[in-house]
Image (cartoon, rainbow, N blue to C red; front, side, top):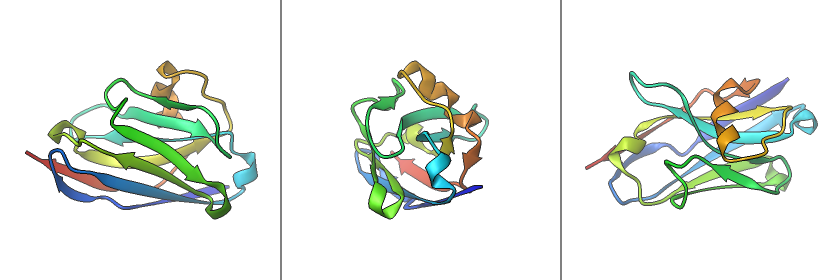
Length: 128
């Protein structure tokens, strides 16, 4: 099993920045891809960013490309989501997720909500 715990959510004004962290534990060596997805009230889950465990290519949804950056510190088993130029429409519960499958393109970021493992979520609220 793999356990994921998110940190770093909060409230910020539009144009501001937040960094989310996700600590991964358990059978992490079985994981290939890691990423973030979000869900706003009354909206579908949306994959936003993905990368490979241990580093490598990164992939983003069109809605966050150029504003969000996914990264990781393998020594700490921690993944990050740096969110800049935040907009009110970024308000959502953010989840980190991990899976054994590989992501190959920005389009496949949409698969993240279906990943095998996810954390409990952290709330991000952006006010105008």
